[in-house]
Amino acid sequence: MLIPHPLLGPRDAQEFTYLGDAALLARPDGMAEGALGAFIDYVYLRDNPAGVHRELWFHEQGDRSWLVVTRNTVTHEIIDAQLARDVALARKGAVA
Amino acid sequence: MRFSGFRVIKEALTGHKGWQPLWRNPDPKPAYDYVIVGGGGHGLATAYYLANTFRKARIAVLEKGWLGSGNIGRNTTIIRSNYGLPGNQPFYEFSMKLWEGLEQEFNFNAMVSQRGILNLIHTDAQRDAYRRRGNAMLFSGADAELLDRDRVRDMCPWLNFDNARFPIKGGLMQRRAGTARHDGVAWGYARGADRAGVDLIQNCEVTGFRIEEGRIRGVETSRGYIAAAKVGVAVAGSTSRVMEKAGLRLPIESHVLQAFVSEGLKPLIPGVITFGAGHFYVSQSDKGGLVFGGDIDGYNSYAQRGNMPVIEDVIEGGMALMPMIGRARLLRVWGGIMDMSMDGSPIIDRTPVEGLYLNAGWCYGGFKATPASGYSFAHLLATDTPHETARHFRLDRFARGHVIDEKGMGAQPNLH
Ligand SMILES: Cc1cc2nc3c(=O)[nH]c(=O)nc-3n(C[C@H](O)[C@H](O)[C@H](O)COP(=O)(O)OP(=O)(O)OC[C@H]3O[C@@H](n4cnc5c(N)ncnc54)[C@H](O)[C@@H]3O)c2cc1C
Image (cartoon, rainbow over all chains, first blue to last red; front, top):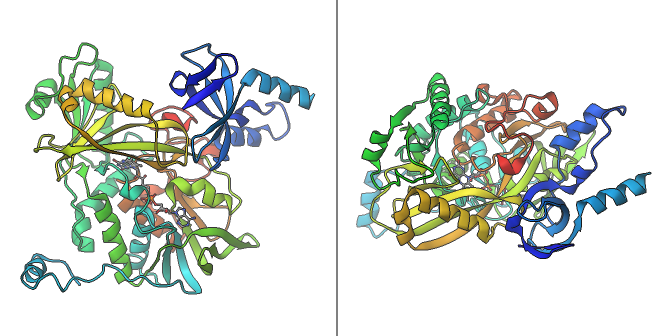
């Protein structure tokens, strides 16, 4: 699989390590009401879809950036890749 | 029709005209007491024990493809009970004991072969870890032996003992472990279940659940609605997809695991051997092919095929351990979809929906578990209490903090 790195162009997926569902970017607030339940969900439960999946890949053998890769889990087709930093900041902006 | 030596001779003399199909191919009835979703090893074993051991009737197994079309027909056939944790090891040892009597019990040749498993040791720390594991195995009533380097050399002189980075310093041996014919196991259970009156319904995909007031009423399928008092789901890699239809989100990710077989070679490898310094394990089938594998690919997948980097990694492991494998030609590579759980251990439990039960999270180790998994799941379905050896495989253990994390990797399925 080739991951279209937004800064470095197409890179072999072998240069990356895989973490999992990009929903992990949305870490719950530990101080909020019901935080325990929210953390159990966050740590242990996954959507695990067959089809389009947004996921976190770390460019360990490259520029050590985190990417949000959109990939089809049925065909392994890679549809999109963005810097996780940009995705997280956009999310924060949207929430604030 | 019973199988026996006498029967084989008789058929040989009469032109093999007396063999009959191993099971019927019935159409679904409108209602059952027990519906098992998934005609893989675990689903078929569950139906078998429900009917034969727990004496239940009105049972159906619903399989979306053909019986044994999933992981039961794709795995590398290793059976063993060499786990370390108290939540796991008694269960796998129970499974090992069931394997030992299985062929007599269901009157089918599953080619259970206790040829032993040897986990190689490459460092002093690894020897300590394996000594501890061996003791945990002995505590559960299983067998374990710590071998020194010379005894390993006697068994397998062709291993690469003096590899500069990964010298072989010994091994942990379980002699009762071994291999079994994976398809034969599915067929044996299927035949035994069918003979006890279970309807094995193929080409019947479960597409939804009918749930009323928190209770299961039946399942929607590609062959129409089927009412059921109790439904047990054992669909391995498809678990999240199927249970989503009952509104459940699970501690599971689906990953692809690949396996490999070489051309047939003369008898060479006495049992199962695992490389302790990389991801590679190997055994030799009765046809002579070297059957080997390694790690999962490591990303969520439903594709039933993997990619080159893991193939390369596995082959490198093989070359480091037994350089002569480089002379063998690779015949086939394939993949199957694993239900990787968040702690690497399985789930056999009820669900929040009354009458709906779950058997999942087998990761890449569910073949050896087939007998005990079927037995325990049948126990749960029949009595509503967990089987003694499976009582730790609870769905809520993650929320309670009682995970069974054999490798100590945390909530990271691709590391288990
Ligand atoms: C390459 C590979 C190597 C392995 N090696 C080993 C090994 O050496 N030792 C070991 O112990 N384990 C091994 N495993 C793991 C083991 O094969 C699995 O854990 C085990 O087979 C899973 O249980 P099962 O047999 O019930 O699964 P499956 O055979 O996959 O059964 C699940 C069934 O459910 C059906 N299904 C899915 N969705 C639906 C639906 N909606 N409706 C109806 N039916 C449905 C599927 O078609 C399938 O037949 C390996 C797996 C793979 C892929």
